[in-house]
Amino acid sequence: MNLVLTTASVPDGEKLAYWRDALSTALVPMAVTARGDGPFSGRISSARLGHLRICSIEADPQRASRTHRHIARTPADYVAVGVQTAGTATLVQDGRHAGVGVGDLVVYDTTRPYSLDYPQPFATRVVHIPRRAVGLPDGSVRQVTGTAIPAREGFGALLVSFLTALTTSVPACSPSVAARLASGVVDLFATLVEERTRRGGKEEAGALGHLVLRVRDHIDRNLGDPELSPHTVAAAHHISVRYLHRLFEGEGVTVARLIQQRRLEECARELGRRDASAPTVSAVAQRWGFANPAHFSRVFRGAYGVSPREWRGTAGRALAG
Image (cartoon, rainbow, N blue to C red; front, top):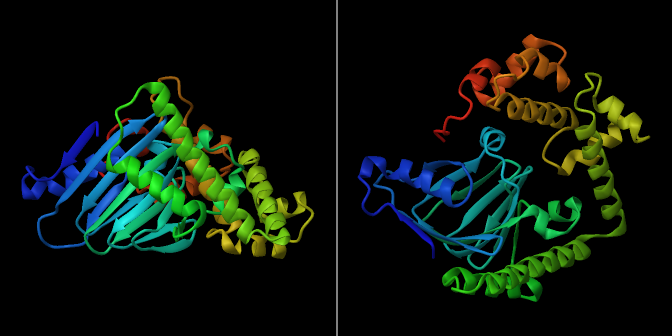
C-alpha cells in the first residue's frame, strides 16, 4: 500500500479528529462520529491502481456521513464499491436503508449524501471507481447505489474475490498492467450492474425508471426558472402531478424538495468559488431560481448551517466535519 494511516501513536483526545482527516484524505471528505466512549482506534491503508482508489479500513464503531455541505465544497464523482470483511453496517442513501453483512458488496455514489453506520468493530475494503469510467447509464447505476448485494454467486462472487485479492495486497506493477487490472474491476462491476438491472428490471419498472431520469434531467436543465414546480414538471412530461409524486415515492425525496435541493447545491457551489469578480449573493440566488432573497437566505441556512454570505466568506477553509 502507498499510504498507511493509524491512530496508534496519536494522543487519545486527538484520535477521532485524526481519523476523520485520514478518511477524508484516503476517500472523500466526510464527518465521523464515534459510537463508543473509550479511546478510538482505526487503521486505513490506501493505494492507487490505474484510475482506481483502493482502501482497506479497520476501525472501532462509528458513523461516517457525507453531506450536502461536503459535496458542495469538494465534489468527487466516484462510485464506491465496498466489501464488508468483518462486522456489520447500515448504508443510507437516496432514502434507501441497506443492511450489510460479512461478505456483502455495498455500492454508493459520492456525489449524493450518504451515511455508513458501523455499530461494532469492523473491517471493509473500498474501491472508488471514477463515474466516467463505468460506462453505464445513470439509471442503471442508480438502481444499485444505496444498496447491499449478497455476493455468494454470479458476478457478485467474482467481484468480491477479485476486490479482496487486490485490496489485500495491491500488486507492484507497471502502469500498463495496473490499467488492465483496473479495467478488469470496472468490467466486472459493470457486468454486475447489468445483471442486477436485468434481474429486477421488468419492462414496466424499466420504463418508470427511464421516466424518473427524464424528470431529473428536466429539473437540472430548468433550475433557473423560478416557475419550476411539480406542476410545471408534470405538464412538461404530460402526466398528472399525482402520478409524478407516485414516480418519486421510491426516490427518497419529493419533487419539490429535489428542486430546492438542486438549486441550493448549485448556489453553494457558485458561492464557494474564490473569485474576486464573483456575482453578488442575490444574483447567484436569482440565477438558480430563487426569486425571494429572504426565502433563499432562510432555506440556505437551514441546509448548510450558515448564511450565504458566511458561506462565501469561509470559502476554501477546510471542513471541520
